[in-house]
Image (tube, rainbow, N blue to C red; front, side, top):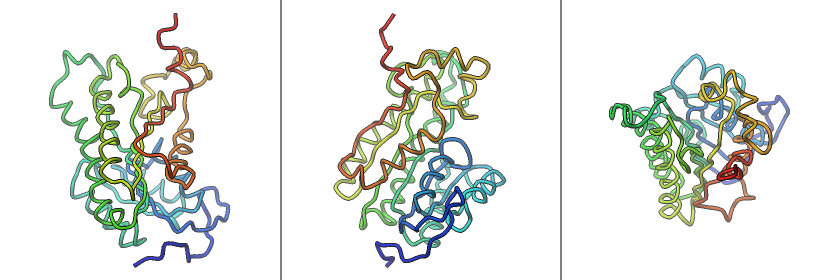
Length: 267
């Protein structure tokens, strides 16, 4: 059984700076770019070993190379594929012997329009990727390591799951389910495993560019802090929620919105 403390030498983190191995291991889904990549980068920078997943093998290989193949492995596949979930968890256990942290970041939003005209098949696809896959990874991580040894899970939700979001209704519904999934797992997995969520507003990624591209200044004007989010904002929050500094926090949804909700109802 792996030791609870690090016994490996110092190696280079994502920044190229030598950092001590923390002895901890994380699995981050949907991490070949954007928010997931930033989360993996933050964890590697503090000394964790990380497995990243993603659909595109080429992008995933590039992410592993950039993050540092001495500390990072990649497992390609679609998040909702149960066989992929099983392989990813097995690969982490084979490579590192433990999974202390799970960050469920994989998500999709294939449509933009009113719910009244939405194909139910599309809604099912959104839920399979955004919610059911998160539960699947949590179940497998729990049984593989966390049930006996503890750890932390972070689910990447969205402010769209906390308030009406016109034209991304299916996505918002799935993220509301993610918030409730967080509550349920936090209750069931306590006391050994803490489960929290992060709900970002618009973050400048390829995934969200339809929400701000060509009108970034106008969009950012609605945020009291005067800017949109960047992936590193979420990466830092995920690092905090998987750190000892958050050991008394579970079942919470941390809103990262640049103060956007402060303006709700203000005219």
